[in-house]
Image: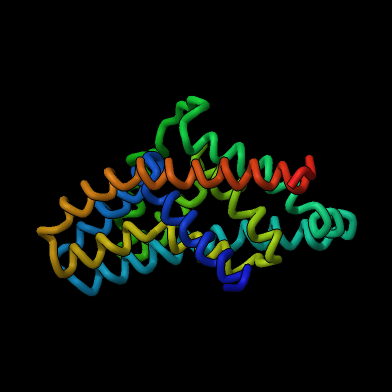
Length: 229
């Protein structure tokens, strides 16, 4: 299995994990409510879900391109990253893992939309879903910031991927909305059941991923920094 394929799977998983974490999940629920207004039209629901996903994906792609390409374009930084990226990944993965395991308590409040902005988006019809995706993608909270800047960006730098990995991360962050858009279109009665399952899965998924990050982070630190393995 190639290293880049593992990077692709990891980027998508980081996006999914972000999407079901409390703060981003709250934004996705708001998006589902927005999309659900068109429950009488299957076409509008599916198109709104697609536009929301594209909106989120574009923001993460732009951030990935700006950060990754700018860092790789600076000769000294590029050389440093090529030679020492594994040394950087160790501490970063360790810190992100600790955050995911809630070993360091962090308080945050989910992003909210003003009534004025909600009204404007409402008047935008299905295209408002795309704007909603853009706005919510920019509304970073501690967990989503740690996963994007602390995990996805170093991963993109390691594989020199400023486009594909951030794009897959963006798709992953919108996955609940895509799923609920299909459910609202074809099986509305299952919406509540799927949402309950997501909230149950989130805690275990975050803890398992956090534990793996801590283990991998310790391994990278021991091997590439302390050099005892």
